[in-house]
Length: 466
Image (tube, rainbow, N blue to C red; front, side, top):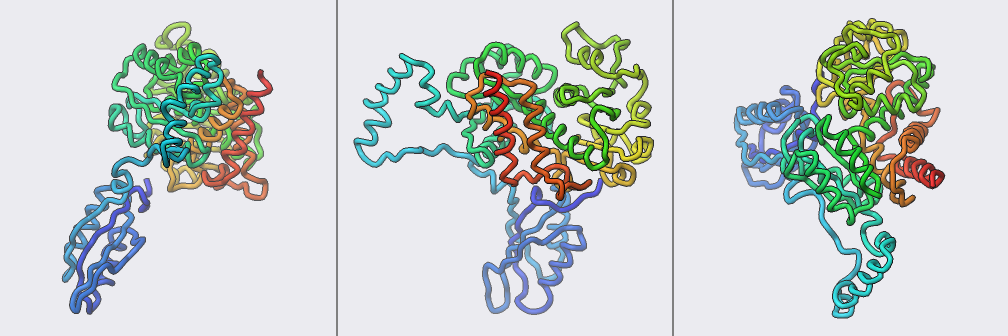
């Protein structure tokens, strides 16, 4: 795996150096020789003989950052002082806050916003519960719910360790769709208790975003909550990923001049994300999908498919039309598309070379993909990953803010498969014909059309379905 310095491992070193001579050029060369990147160099203090310098450096891992710092300590004349990790500094005190939308300047303001005036609003809602969307934050509020059991790239780290991720999710909702999202980290991994808890807090929210809950429990939790609540329930690890994959696949197929209904697709991973991707691809018109997990290709002859209503059995019943029974590598030969949402380094460039001409590879395991992207590029026409340091990042932030914006604007009570397909097509259409190429199949997350186009598409489906 190629490693490049990036902002995730950015840190600032405060050091002192002689004011004369070549100490500054030595420290710059030391960082560069160690594979780091200096992004800022500020003189924060000066004396007759010494300079105090703050050097901001990008590394590619914590170990790499420590290696660079040790190298600086070894430079003659350099004294290394405080080392500040910029990512940790950004998280100090949390990344989000609650802010009042109304001024509380005097007694009149207080009397209207709180007691006694607020009682009139409470009585109005009691008399007409539908007014809660009009008169409270419910109309624009989402609960981001996790138990910390399947945090991306980290696994089962629990609710407290998952909180920084949920804060980040809430910040993205606000930044890209103007939605007030609240991190709800539950200190239980019991399916029934999670369902009861979410149902109990639901009155304060217009939607539920389930996040980082492990399979297969996530399937049951989402299904039950959708049945029991009158607000939309969205599992981003499933449906957010699926929307962006379908959008990216739509444009990748345009690049190689192939049609979704005609290509042979091989997927690695039958968990939450994999199953959702498969279902959405089928809804969008895919005809030939073969799925493999750590036991090999999923087929109806396997004895581990579970109960009649299990998700793995559903996969076996709706995929693998050719009846493959072998390994992932065997199924991959001659395939047009590979989609990985499974484990790192399970394929090589030689495996990708066995695919059909004009092949498409989506290796989405994070942080280390199923196949090295550089090796895949030697043989595939289009390569996408979940990483930010390669082109074509499959990033859920392209989907969930706009998707929920559309749901809230439509005051939708449910999520329909047609909404997911419409969202994916709207996202794909953000990439214009004159922009499309093998390294640009999804738009930037900062493109203002992303959230607005997705929201409009979802709202249109929701309104038409009433």
